[in-house]
Length: 409
Image 1 (cartoon, rainbow, N blue to C red):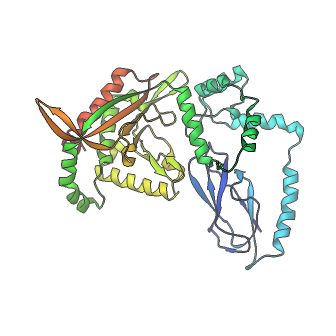
Image 2 (cartoon, one colour):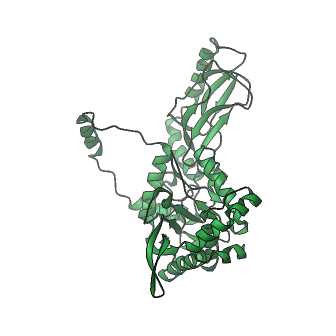
Image 3 (tube, rainbow, N blue to C red):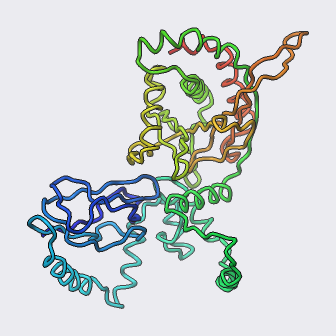
């Protein structure tokens, strides 16, 4: 008999949700075969069986929240429906659950140890000790779950929940006459909602705008796309141009490629560019790692691969870790103009939008040109107006002269 446990997922992830059982009790299981799909804050993970046999019992249902190390299923020996093994598994699980019940005296120790296991900066730990806050109760903005000093301050300043909220919810439910459908938010949607709100509350976010004449880029892409595809077996899109332009601008304006840690600014000497991808489960931001070292073809291939993995729920923690700046493209949905919100602890995000033909003054003449509005949202605590405007202006100039980007790569 073998126990299926929730594996170690990442340092910042301690629990997940059973998204889907891939095997049902009574079905044969091969060693290394996927048993269950777990949904976490960032990615979906498929758990395998370490032993061959028959799935005897499921100890958690779809939608249940499970912790790392928790037994969620039993695989017994033999083949076919294990009628006698399921009760044994249940009896075996019962003493284990009873034994795992902590004594009241251990409750304080458990709370302390959970705080110790929390990943936090020295400044955050010092501030938490001073204010008497348990770090395990603090919700970090960092996508990797690292608690920083500003997270502790935000937790300390958060208003207490209204006592009347449960009564109001009960009253609203009592008046439900069928015109409202209640849906439980998925774990990922809850995380997205929480972190977006925390970003708005813990940063001094501003947005600056500009517009790009896409004429030369569209002409160059049209002229080179067939040759590019023949040579690289990947299509030439706009994202590689934008990624190259962003990397060049980040090198000139390093504070846009930074983050705040307590009273320190961390300047990142790497260029892992996050590309926002819309999926059925919500927006995810996998990273093109070392984008400064990649060619146009390598960037296009990386973006295509990451987008496919995102839509197939195959992203790994490595795909989601370490981003330094993000690009999001609302133009694919027809957005003309928006103010993108910062991603985690990053201090800058570039928003692309739909291409629209508009009359533009070229010298003394009016011409119809394909134009795109672009927006840079930034954390004013780190980036001054001069740098934010200069950064976006440089991106504009590079994209309006795309031959320079190709030669530079």
